[in-house]
Length: 221
Image (cartoon, rainbow, N blue to C red; front, side):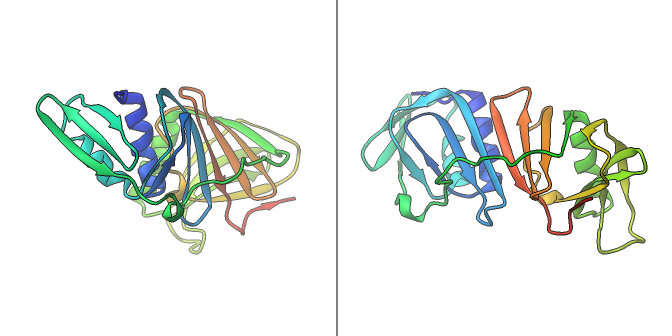
């Protein structure tokens, strides 16, 4: 089989969440961070013919980059990456040493929902880098709601905010994320947030979704 560019982009994204990956037979893959605070599921345009475990996904992608458009031939304990007269044998890992979700996440009832477009997502990430802000908070101030990157431990630290249109009741809330946990592919997202300190972000551009844990300082009143 050949891997499409879309599949490669998902694999690159997943490598940023967890260094290893269990790919099951079929066209759906999932990953979970080592801290178990990020989970993602994606449906791919390509179908894998057998289950394989990859211990170092970045290494596997680097091996793929040695070729322009290779064929992948899956054996019992390794995959042959072949193009023209070149080939590379890449051995699978033992599945027992790979971190992988073992059950489907059931999202609790949501209290807040909104749409986050890709441009604003990138602005928030860039701003967090510029002002060295480790935290992102969805906060309600009076009747207005903002997404703000800040350092929640420092009241005098620089901040950057964007207005957000949300669907919510009249309750006040402060939902905190770690910026480093927003390992999302580029694009627009429908976002649901539960007061149980979990969020669900579903891409409107690609067949991929994420569940990201909120920080314990989050509040909903």
